[in-house]
Length: 196
Image (cartoon, rainbow, N blue to C red; front, side, top):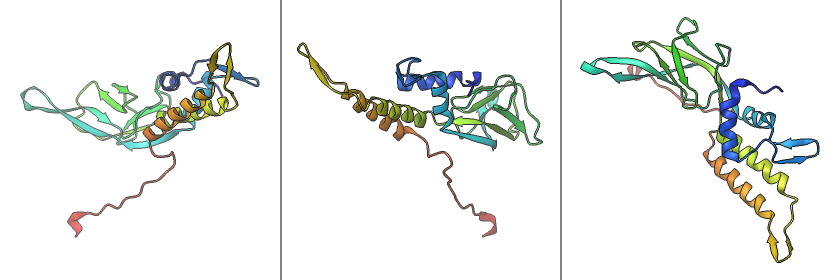
């Protein structure tokens, strides 16, 4: 699969979390960790967000005037847009795509250039669990190093098995930071108090 230009920032982040270079080692015909490997790890831990209602964040301006420039998604680590493609879209209540905003894709925050007076907006995009992807990469690194052996030569002890132990510790660390598994469902009940 071709590497998407909209994934560059997320792939750099994942490489930093996993200490994954572009040519760390080769197994069979594959050199790890190519951009394809990194993007695939992220894609395995993604969720498509469709028309999520954004939360308007009010701010208090000079003179006590309330304004609404910032809107917040409950998701983070979005794939960025590349000129209005379907990667990240903000729509109003009529379904019209909006312009005049910037995004903090990592935090899921949209900032409009003008006050939106609390208008309703919806977000469509793909969010990634970078910590689950990092755990995935570390587990793969542990598996790739599992057949390495310890040895001694010329008075030096080489403990290559430590690579496996370190990779497993890092995988468990990032696994504990990951969101709920993609596709898991959380169900709650809402009750209108005015009908009680």
